[in-house]
Amino acid sequence: MSTAHVTDHTAHHGHAAHHGDAVAQEDLRVAVAESELTLGQQERLAFRIERSDGETVRDYDVSHERQMHLIVVRSDLTGFQHLHPELAGDGTWSTPITLSEPGGYRLFADFSSAGGARTLTSDLRVDGAAELVDLPAPAPVATSDGGDRVELERVSGRDAEAEHATQSASAGAAATLRFAITRDGKRVDVEPYLGASGHLVALREGDLAFLHVHPSGDGVEFDTVFPTAGRYRLFLQYQVGGRVQTVAFTQVVK
Image 1 (cartoon, helix red, strand yellow):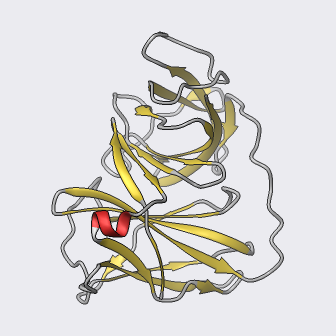
Image 2 (cartoon, helix red, strand yellow):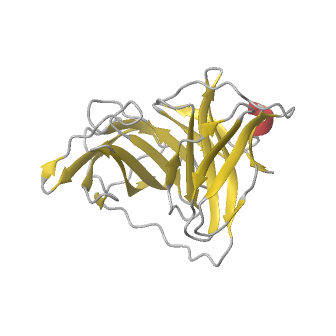
C-alpha cells in the first residue's frame, strides 16, 4: 500500500491542506490498495482511512450530502476529477476511475469523522512519458466543459469592496470569489449541487496545497482565505439541467 498525509486547518468556509507531520498529529492516514494505474483504462480505485495503530475508520459524518469527497488531479493541475466513492462494510472506499494521461497524480480524501474535518492525500502513478503543461495565465473568463461562459466577477479583500478579477488576491486576507454563468448571452440559473449553488476547490501550483470552499451567499459566491502566496488553480463545479459542469481559473495570490 502507498500512503501519504497532510496537515489541515480551517480557513473561513474552507480548509487548507499542506504536507507535514500529520500522521502523528491527526493519527490518521489514507492507504491506497493499488497506486499504479493503467493508462486510459477504467479501474477500481480502493483505499481506506486508517489510524496509526492500523485500525480502519468506519464511521463518517455526512458533509455536503456525502461522507467522502475524493479529488484526483495530475501534478500539473490537469485532469481534475471529483468523485464520490462507495463505502463497504470493512471500511474500504472504492470508485471507478479512468486516468487518460500518463504521469503522477495526487489523491485528496476529504471527509469528516467524529465531527472533525480532514483532508488526507496519497500519490497515484500512470506509466508513460508525461507531457506536463504550464498553468494557464490568469483570465477573468473561461468556458466550462459544457460550453457555458463563466466569468470570475470579483476578487475582494477586507479593505477593498471590489477589484478586477485578474488582480491578485492577498495571502491571509478574506477574499470573495463570485462567478457569473451565461449561455447564449443569458444568465444560467444553477441547480443545487451537493446541497449548495456550487463547489470550489483551489490547488496551489507546485506543492498542490489544497483549499476546499463552499458557497457563502445566494449566488455562486464563495468567501475564503488563501493561506499563502502563489498561483492557484480554481476548479468550480455547478449543476444545470441535471449535469455537473466544471470550469477552471488561475488565481494569483501575493
